[in-house]
Length: 268
Image (cartoon, rainbow, N blue to C red; front, side):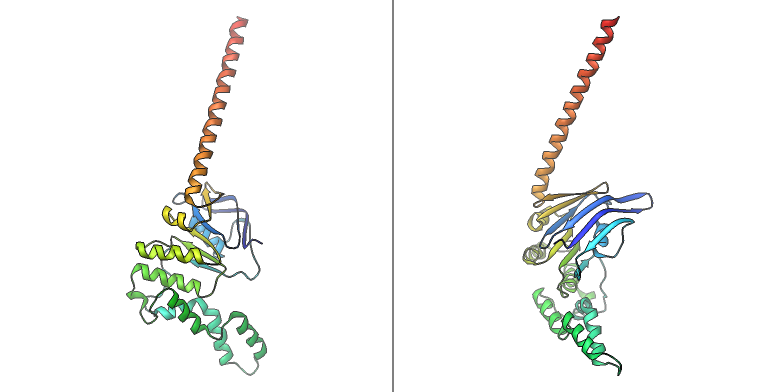
């Protein structure tokens, strides 16, 4: 069953149409590389899939109870916060619920709160944060403002991952990362059990990570199986076929024009 289904979506900013009857389906375990020219609307589409924006027309369907995490290109982290607290922001609902349980008022339904805590796995949220920090090799005591761009990117990723999302939406995740960090991210995503949609201009990264390429071109979405190299081969084949079809059409038109001229000359 699809996790996300975008059907006949339209999205525009002023006169610029970013999506024009665009459709897309994300399946469990799929790792999609979203590509397109600069300014084509890739980041806007990612925000739409994350539920941060809505289409002007069309429909976005999400699987019931879907856990989705979005990591933007830049920002979103409090420079004064510790790394631990920044990552714990990814469990804000769980933290608030446990605090409400611990400080409950006399009229609260403790049984219902208990059930919600179980559902969110909120009893031990600190342990979940610590485990995620360990997995991403982050020091929870450091301040975010002290970190390099690559380490800050890991913190943003950790904040998304701590909630155990089923869908991970990444906008240019290799920005500010050195080669070792990119290699680590490639390996991590290859082992990630959920689905991924990633916007990236890094062809080598897309070759290593993507199982599907989706191209956003003039408001439409086209899906190609395989990584970026497979997409390039398929696109070259399509362009060659289009060129051959255009050549055949030109030849036929030239033949028809010659036939018309011959007919006119014969009647003179």
